[in-house]
Image (cartoon, rainbow, N blue to C red; front, side, top):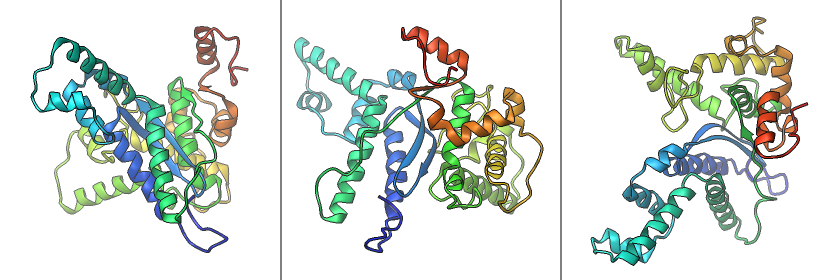
Length: 306
């Protein structure tokens, strides 16, 4: 899919750029935010947040504007946009169309369908062929608590290091952690060069992070990932060094702040970031949350609940 083709000798890393650009475009249209990503040579990982409340708050006009960025419209909606007065029956049908589009704009299945179909078409066009491109349907897991979100994000961001194709987070190409670090360093450098005055901590948190990724902030900042960015970078960097202690650089023996805050045991954490996909099935979280989810779905047990 991406990377080097051992049969032709061609390099397809530019397709990784396609994927990164497409997920960012889709997240600017859908009410689905990117928390983490890793684009590997033959697969990719995404951690996203579905912001249903945001989609429900959109006006009808905003739903239409977003839908028309990706899909063909409807003749009735075109009549509405042209200022035509709709009769009562047409209004009811119009409302049904908008409700359907609104629901699809916070639906992961529609997000993934658009992403995979777009990449398949572009790759097939480049290869001058037709037919099936992806091996199978995407697999997804619902993250039920903060620990599950954090460990899944770290699992994704550490993909290149686990695969031994990168030694550091900065060298982990086509990952969200690389993008976050690069953006933070650029922001810090620009601030120092410009001799800018210090701003409020929350403002710095916001401006030092990529706008197209879901932001870190803390429990006191609504709508953010409930941890500080630097604490997350410290955690992922420390975790990567524990995976392979031979990696270059000093190994900090102290436990990262986030693990202490969430009361997560070191061994449990390291097991999770290396085997996250194998630990859980459709849902990921603490044993208590998995049991609650199983009860609410009227099933006896979910993988990971012990």
